[in-house]
Length: 425
Ligand code: PMP
Image (cartoon, rainbow, N blue to C red; front, side, top):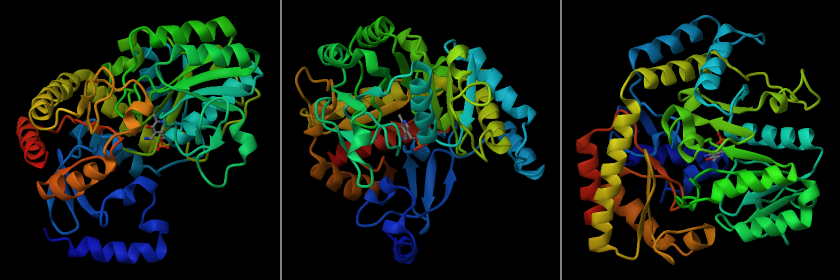
């Protein structure tokens, strides 16, 4: 494979960008990341002209793939050409808010921000402001962006910052528990119940697995938070408008969280985040309430248009049928490959999310981060940065992040990918 251009670009990047990249995970590709020239439907073309089936899809935002339908492209171009942003409200912000409120029953009001990180940061501040409490419960192996309150590791008895640069006193207010472990949640509520502002969880762990909730787990979280006057926050940055279609994962699970954080798809491929939920809570954001929240770029007209046109296109076309059907075919094909060639591995995912986890724990389905932690990451690296890339398949940059099907993917992409997995494994 020719990669001279990517290597040159990486050399240049290393002298001006820390680690040569603008987001930590991107450098994980070995021996250096390929630089992207452009997207093409369900494919991506690198700086040297190599073409890959792309299951990363921007790490989740590109529900429609790289080729945008005419309505989406026109909406984006029009807003970009009318002066990209104003520092004053615009109609398209209201249009997208109304769309989300119409389709996600738990969302009565919504505030748009610029990233998933900003959404979870603001949601945690809102939960603390609304309840007057300090602590938040999070799931080990969950990810909520690069923010101080959730970059925490360890357990609820000994939480520690997981990054340099975060005072350990911040971590004191974050209580990590294993996913799917009801007793651990009961324990933290017994100990800290009066000071827990919220339980914050992804409905499906998409950054460490994929790990699915066991039956009844979300119902249990809903009940225990209600009993203690704490909020339940679903982080649907990945699952929002992907799992469960336009109703999001919460509709699939039949759960009504108090707050939901969004990102990725709701911005149609442009920088976005959002915090939605019960009006009474979301109204606590400034200027209607005392919880400060603001942003120069928030509700950016180009992003709002891209999000609105993307979701409208999904509402009017067979987008979810297509991506979910291909997702099913990929997962069942991978089950066969794994059963045949790597019976100690697990195929996980639902709807248009999928992942082969290089381990099989307990009952065969990882229940939490500890189960996934034993995955054979070295073998994964060898296989994926050697073998799958050589077979023109681009997968997520590490063993733990999930992969995504888009509307632009085809049966042939699925077949080629299954064949590549078969050979590689
Ligand atoms: N929450 C979840 C569940 C995520 O997966 C991510 C990023 N993948 C974030 C929050 C942070 O979003 P962003 O990278 O847009 O800041």
